[in-house]
Length: 173
Image (cartoon, rainbow, N blue to C red):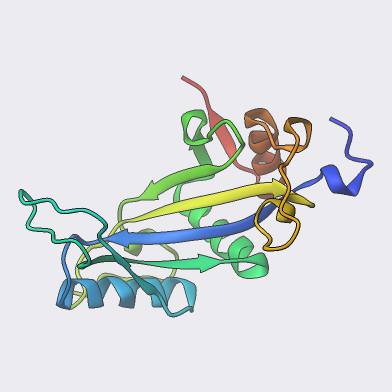
């Protein structure tokens, strides 16, 4: 891979940490508390888009919360999250564009966190979006353009970036 061109280097666009609790009320507030303790940012509520009668979910009901981390905050949080996972991620966690998603089953696994009976146990999903510089043109308002396939990140490049940037070991089946 040629890394002499700075426009070809991958970087983290954003890291989204989300907790789905399935209902509004006190449980959602406790989930927000967990995210605020871990990330230092105020979480936003996620709203259901569909109806699920079996689970008692109505359209427009708050059912979870999330935090979007960028730049230094994303790197700092991911170092902690990979430490919880023993710096091991499965190859299936990467999509075809090099983005990565994985879950953590308990927030108390993070360093410095202890179990609080008032909060309970919450797991979370972590999604990481990777890209190269210049991909902003696909989302801007004026003069929106498509990204050519040769400039998009690949599965293998995403794995290589995570191995180098965070020292993550990727496990293959």
